[in-house]
Length: 462
Length: 98
Image (cartoon, rainbow over all chains, first blue to last red; front, top):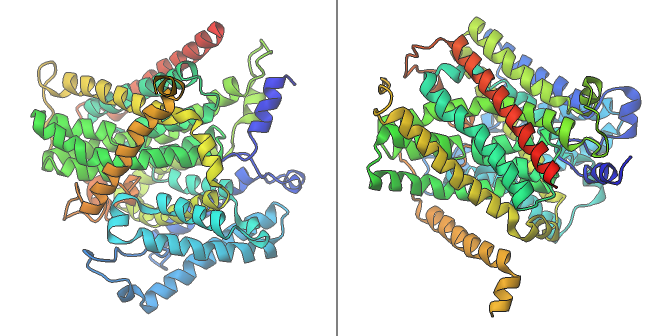
């Protein structure tokens, strides 16, 4: 093995994707990726049965917004139904993840004890995330990281808790569950206009940021480059999670990309509609620009609303197409890293299919398959409303899995590591330059498509 | 001073961006700017399914596409293939330069 390849192997340790694969699991044949797919599809199946049969309630606990400004107080939520949901959520998650651990040849008893403590922290994270202001601007990813970091950098994490700090396991499972909500059929939502605005620009921005990050800024951490690139060009946190796992990025890479995206999304959500109004761009073009450039879908909707009904609808239409790109882009990134980044630089031969299969993070197939099944099998057969109802349940399980993952990242990170990750501030420069390029290019495409000077204007029903 | 700025150029640029960004975002959050009273979410709804009652956004047809879905999928895949080739080309070219 060449020194570069050896260095990469070493680098892959502590990744979002491939670390912590115990020796025992290899003997038994079931890897973390296999289990993420199995657990993810069990969640999808049970949620589908619950919705279609209407026989039982599978929805997990979700805190309603509380605090000054909200309709409900925290105390008013503590009803018998709340405690019932809390127990259901704990039992379902503990059962699924503990059985998965057992299948990997690890101690179920040690994991269950540690997981129970981690779940308590996750409940606390979701509780503070539901506070009126926190819920609207930052939500779970930020608070999970913050709480984890505070615990690990003050009191530290005891050894008995470590078996449950399994970032990759939770993320992969959450992604397979999330795959069911990535509906490819949304491609038709805004016809050719949406496809051009969302799909023409996105890959160009990714390639530009890849070039800029790797070859201009000389960033050696390629998984970090691609994670920031997709967070910027696709849809923020959710795209970052999917791509970081596909590229086997380090946990800290993911937390850094997500933190940058969240902070700038807050600012863009407020300033972009103001600038659009000030320049007189109009609700149609303004909404499309917001849909193509603001990272999170919630921020897109709120910013679009500031431009009126047309702005809101156009923004959501464009963003709904960007949301479907997550699966394809994560899959492409996984193949790219398997064939080009992880390739031995001394080797001149092409990487064969068997080698690609060996290197490919398998859970990505589960994520992609869930998306295709929901889009082309489930939705045509069961209808949009049924799929939406199933996704209403699955989204909350996905969020629980991601909260467990991000809390684990926080628990596994010290402040010194974050400082090192900044590598002289290059990730921030990459984000800013990439986002500016994204805005300029999206504006150009939006102007050509929706100004009415080149093509007829679309008829949008409000 | 000039020497310090030259040696710490990236750090200075970063601080010049990061500090105002953090202050601005804290100000926005403290003042509750940019929110809509009718929407119980904001930037924290990272994915569409995170938005409460997201069905109202996804289950409504706002636009009747004259282009059929299969044609959009073909165009989608074609552009994806072109971009994939471009990415490989850019990566190969720049590696050759190195």
